[in-house]
Image 1 (cartoon, rainbow, N blue to C red):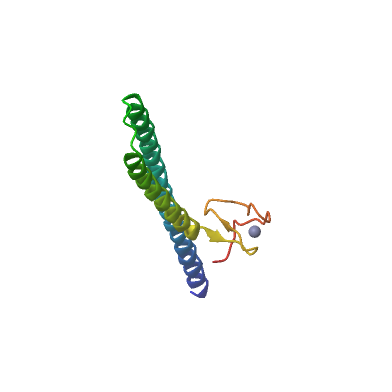
Image 2: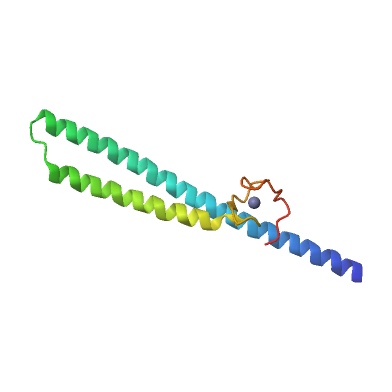
Amino acid sequence: MDFFNKVKDSVSKGVSNVSEKSTTMIESSRIKKEISALRAHKTGMLTDLGKLVYVRFSDDKLSADEIVSKCLVIQDIDENIAVKEKELQNTLNLCDCGQRFVPEAKFCAHCGKSIGEVEE
Ligand SMILES: [Zn+2]
């Protein structure tokens, strides 16, 4: 009986560790997706801005206000990306050496420690 309880205990511990890890992975891949969507948006805005500048230049109606307002939108996207990247950092695990690593990593990129069996 004692043996079975021990097995049950370690099994449920293992399961909860796994779900905790996959939650982190889901969370980090969600944020990664948001970041790449923001980057795609930014690329689109930069293309728009470039076209606008060129069209206005060709028409001899280059207006700083119009360009600045587009730049402000892009700057806003950049700030959003920075916020998301910070969020992403927070979903990463912390190594003993103080560096963060992605949940799926096998070794710490900083100190080389094997992190397959990291204690949370
Ligand atoms: Zn490390």
